[in-house]
Structures are given as C-alpha cells and as structure tokens.
Length: 227
Image (cartoon, rainbow, N blue to C red; front, side, top):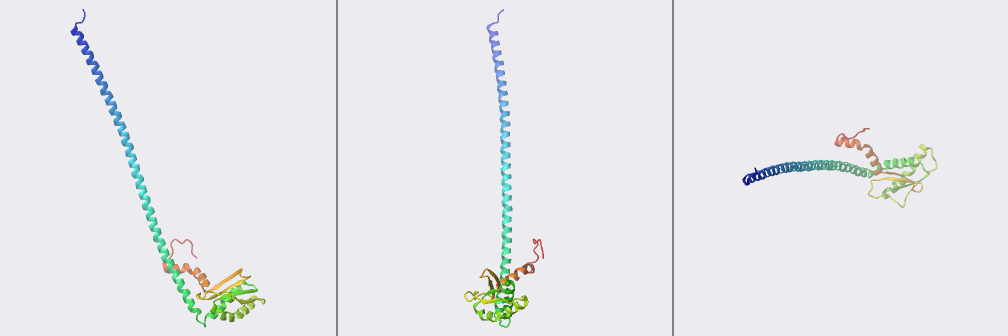
C-alpha cells in the first residue's frame, strides 16, 4: 500500500525540519567556534599589547632612571669641579700674595744682595760651564755686576775650577715687573737655569702644595699615597 500525499508531505516536512535542525546546529557550532577563536585571538592580541605597553613603560622608566642618574652625576661633578676651582683659585691667590711679598723683599737692599748672590752661585754650580751669561732685571744690572766676582770666587773654591767667565746679557733683560732673580745660560743659550724669584717660588710652592692644601682644606680622602 503506497503512501498517501499526506504521508509524503509529512515525511518531507520531517526531512526539512531535520535538515534545518542540522543546519542550525552546524551554524551554532560554527558561530561558537568562531567566537571561541575570536576570543582566543582577542586575548592573544590584548596580551601582546599589554606586554608591549609594560615593556614600553618599563623602558621609559629605565630611561628616566638613567637620565636621573646622569643628571645627578653631572650635578655632582659640576659641584665638585666648582669646589676644586674655588680651592685652586684660593691657592693661586696665596701664591700670588707670596710673590708680591717676595717682590717687596727684593726692594730691601739689606737682604736682596745676599739672596741674589746665592742665586748666582747656585746657578754656576748647576751649570758647571766655562762661559756663562746672566740675564737679570735692568734695575738689578749693577748689583749683579758687583756680585759676580764673589760668586766666581765661591765657585772656584768649592769646585776647584779656575777657568770660568761670567758676563751679563746686555741685550736681553728680565721684565721690569718680575719679582727679581736671574736666569743663567751656557753653550750659546742651549742650556738654561732659571733662578728667578718666580721660578724658585714655583718650585718650593709645588713641593709644599700638598701640605698647604691639607692645612687649608683638610685631608684628601681620595688621595691614595702620602709622603
């Protein structure tokens, strides 16, 4: 017995409903999977961006900290250099004051001749040459000329040397504003001994400079070696 048209229609409706149900379920499955993949991708992108943001601000924080350290170091160095310059200026001012006092001393004709005689003799001892030329201030010229024979005599007695000639350089003089003293030349000017007041002051000042600094500014904690 064949199916009636009603039965056929029912079967068709049943098949259509089944297909629609399958399609709906498939759509839901696809949508669910798509949403899941979307959420995963969204989470991945959000995580990536979060990591990038964290890295960006971490880098910025490190840059700011580095800049702060550099700025602090620069300020500390600038302050240190300023202090060192102020100290050096003070020391140089003391040196200049000492030079002025020595300049006043050279004006004392009861003391300066003795100083000058010793400077001439010492220069001759250092050179130990047969011919020596002396350069002095123009206003010391006559005094130096008077002191040369005495210096030669001391040189001959102490070093047992008889052959020596000492002359004054009449063409070149020390600056009038210099503190005094002399310069000695030998071998046509190739050898020079500077026994000016400034040169002697500089030598002595450099020798006692650590002691001066310690008395003025205290012990230098950064100094590794002490005399």
